[in-house]
Amino acid sequence: MLADAARTVDAPDVVIAVSRYGERTVHRGGVAPAGPVPRELLRYELGSASKPFAGLLLARLVAQDRVRYEDRAADLLAPGHPVHPAVRAITLRHLMTHTSGLPALPADFYPQAVPRWSTDPYRGYPADRVVRAFLRARPRHRPGTRWHYSNFGVSVLGHTLAAATGTPWEILLHQQVLGPLGLAATLLRPGPADTDATGHRRDGSPVPALDPGGFTAAGAVRSTPLDLLTFLEAHLARPPGPAPAAPAAPAAPAAPADQTLAAALAEVVRPVLRRGWRHGHTHTLTWFRHPSAYGPVLFHAGATLGQQVFLGFRPESGLAIAATATRRVRRGVPFVATAYGLLTETL
Image (cartoon, rainbow, N blue to C red; front, side):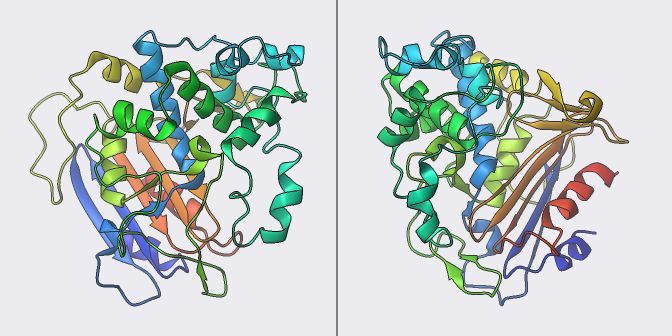
């Protein structure tokens, strides 16, 4: 089944990694010859699939009583700075759940990005510019009233948490999420030579490594499929009864001993809002949540200029899937649909 799924994805490198209660199966494929480093050991750019990491970090800081979901971002980020009343009302929860009223990206992002849209659109928009754009923003909708996907909002969340804790985002994420979960191969910047996957354009030419500029919290994580499985497995409750058979690949670490991390993992799978046609789509703090024949599925996809990632899990059946590909094609290559189908249809 995994081999068939991989063959539908027209990408130089494809990895589909599956775990059921810690027992792992990893399929490697792609239209290009395999390189010297096994595909499942390379780091892939997660793009928007970085957001579940940001949400888990927020949930853990809340569990530690360092911030609250209802804290106002502007008060933490720039106390006393004059802002629009709607901006003053934006909370940390609004930023993480895409209900802040902010657009997908700041209005002044596009003029500097368009000339290098296919190569490096984010590098010219650093962190201080993201913060300034937020403080002068005029939200399109009253915070908390509408859902609108926003890289801008999650990026502001990252800068706000860094300001509130006095800790740079990268260090904060390592201290609170990556380190405790044992994600040693997960980084927020390119790794040593030959450790990162290379993205490709539709014509097969390579794409430079992503520089997220000031949008780090929304899309800077890069990780291996095996680390991604470990991250997903942490969200899954173990079944009652005997322990599962020994895994085919390294299994996830034991359930987190730190109660604040355990509380955060429980919090991020809890439904918090509905949207879409007849409010049929449910969302948690960090995940899209859909029904399936085998219970709810939680997932998030991500893409950069030359790579795609899908992360998903089914809590009721202990199933987790991490899929990566080194080509991004908007149409004709059903990468997300293929991975989503595996998640929803696999027994």
